[in-house]
Length: 112
Picture 1 (tube, helix red, strand yellow):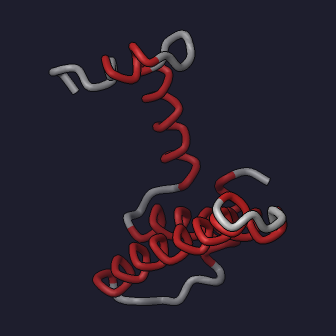
Picture 2: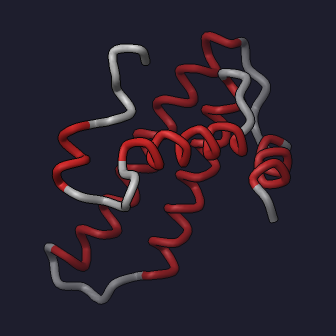
């Protein structure tokens, strides 16, 4: 499955809302899902419970849905957003991650 297909299928399950409400739904939903992922990880890392990989993968999937919805609300394709992000990272980290390049932020030149 590619990101175009994912976004189209995911948006079949999105509630139709006026733009202002959609933006609120998007940002609150992202925060909610990130909280649920955090809680799932906290259970194993802080409380010593067995890692619930199924729940963690479901929460990551829910976050992906919310990111697709965020792109949709602002009129972007998830594919385009993903491509732009990889292009930015290629400039920022030309030879892969390094602390130097993380601080230099080569993608944030004065022309940008």
